Image (tube, rainbow over all chains, first blue to last red; front, side, top):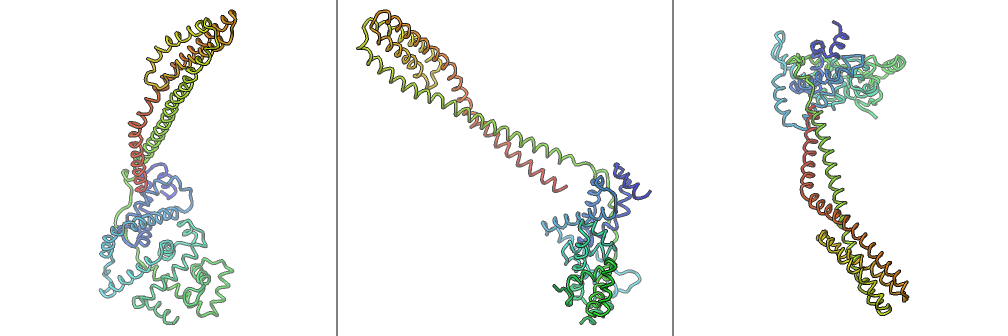
Length: 198
Length: 268
């Protein structure tokens, strides 16, 4: 069954049809939420809330990119979750500890040292992402991690193209500054460029 | 304005869009020409590309659970509309009770005012009636004086007695006989002005008419005033007692329901 038929079925109250859409998009939605939220439990909460909101608000979907429409709901759910966590910072402490435990471990093909370096690099990138303001972070995640084009990002965040361009440029500049502080962890190509720039 | 390595924000935006292929062909051509000659600009572009590549290298994480929805998750929220309706009803009830309280207070105060006014008017008239017969008596003939004066006080006294009993609680009582006495005194005075026999008869009739008019006024007043007094008596204690308790109770319920509604709404 194609996506449009599933959407129509879900609109008429077919929960199974909607759940097939959920299965198609839950990986994307969760990963976007994870990069925005910075930890798995909060990302899972935001993703679940987003799918519930999407089902309830499906009647408002008027065609166009379903992925962009859904990601708009996901990013809004993440903003809500971030606001909730800001109000209750104590609650997020446990979640941060859980996140530390959830960092990726060595794959069977790489040695322990390489695995540690990779994990460290991932942590640094995540820290740098979390150092951005949420509105800049979302754009960087959607373009640089999820590979969206500017038009889709504009639809997903409900802002004009010019805003997307501007936010992305600022986000990349800040990320670059942040990553340069951890030069020893960066891939050789970046380190060489940094040295050449000096 | 400059950002990194002396690159302006505008150039940074162009470089960022250029590497994503999001610049218009004309802009892209212009920038490409600049990049050939400007080493700093091309260095910044390479830096941005490398950064995007590193960030884009973050691995996808497998979702820890399925996010498929259950019937329970999407069950319509019934509490919210019910709470909204209850809050609106309680607020309406509160407004009605406060309105009723204000209305009853208003009636109560005006009803209490009437007997007070009547009392002061009656007091004034009584003093006038007492003065008039004494002034007029010497000028009138003795026969006429008796003829004119006799019926009026007798009638007034008889008429006043039952009314005095019926409105004993109200302060308007003195007004009733005094008003009648005043009318009678007026008729009496008119009778006294004439010395001739036929005129005396005419004046006698006038005095009787005055007495009758006074009776009519007394009757209408004695009917209206007790009713107003009783409304005032009923309204005043009611508004200050149970009605206030109801008002406070409803206000507390409205605040409670409003808080609960907002809380449920926030939880979504």
